[in-house]
Image (tube, rainbow, N blue to C red; front, side):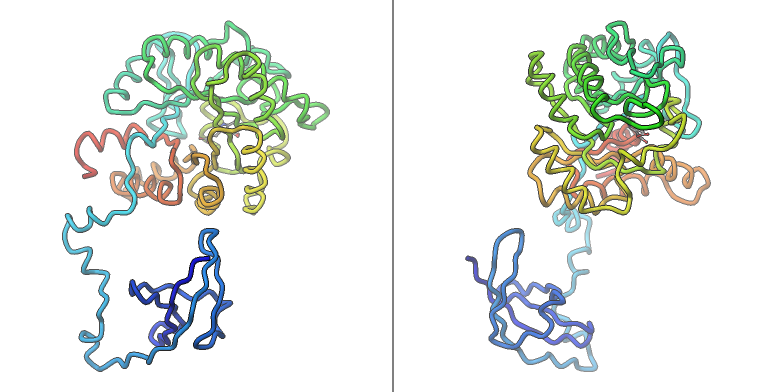
Length: 398
Ligand code: PBG
């Protein structure tokens, strides 16, 4: 057990009690449970899973003279005076290596169709996409997550087209890997782009049937691995799907194909522009029987534990901004890499405010991405990846 000495200081000015760590002059707010502690008392505290005993000593309260200047020994502003100071002390840095750029695809030729509710994002046909990818790679982006828009006529109840070898999405992935073997391609494993019901699972009499969905997802996953995707992203939220997909991939020899599980995916209002982009909104009902309730946080731990046990390689929280606490929670409790999906609606809000002149894009956007990283995400999926990469290249983020 690890022992630390703390001094109990009465900080009237701050209207609260502080534990002051002797050696470092480090102020830490007292947990409410410790408010009645006495001098000399030994208390126990668990910091990051290490039990500590804290020995409490009372020190005389500093008397604040009228000239508070002489009493203010600790001045946080001192460390913010010059750019070099600030750079030296910066705790988190977002690099392009953390970013994944989502791209919408469409079958055909010479297609680059803007998504109205997500300006600056397009449905790409392969001929248009390849130069776009080249430009992104030159800017330093290497990871892409791809989503297919599928013709209504190809949709059915069992998402047959999802694992059809003629599926254009699979063929695009194979072509992209041929042209850019160094690119990291992430897929979407879910029925909704291919389902005539617009749901992520198999629908029978208005119900989403979990166990009938699993083999469909596994078949889709194996087809995607075969096409050359490096990482598969099950976004469906069916129970047991990570283990089911992992087993199918291993049986087919794809032991090196990773699984980026949408671990805590919430039934959020912020997916609207994405569903516009893919025409994938549910035809009836909503996704609340499989996606998580936005009110829940502890439940994310339960989902995470299952994904961990089932062999997920990455855990994702989605959306990102409204769920920074969940990102932090998983980061603190699991050693797997944590991803966050900065979803379409979250990006659209910022774009809209900037178009109105209410926010400045080049300031608000990097601050937003940094906040997701600071909360604990190693990997950020964001529609702003290219804009961020451009700012890096132009030296605007030094
Ligand atoms: C569906 C899926 C969705 C998103 C990614 N995969 C939408 C949904 O669950 O309805 C949303 C991503 C975004 O909004 O950017 N499998």
